[in-house]
Image (cartoon, rainbow, N blue to C red; front, top):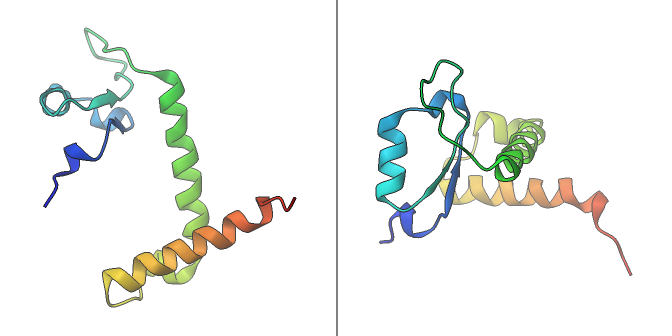
Length: 101
């Protein structure tokens, strides 16, 4: 079984995850921490602003997915059927933006 550190290059998180312990664990796993520093941090750590903007897109996608009651309330009994419906809902949300050549 592969660990998650083998599958990701960066962790996009908000200021609530700005802790030295979290940053150290990410550094040990060779994962880039894209976490803005809290205002009261004495030594603010830099973060990649371009990558942090991706987080907004992800948040907006989850907001749209939660409009599907079945996704928001997790009615499905198995993880496979839940993730299958999330995939279907994602495709249906993306469909209006598909261009036919």
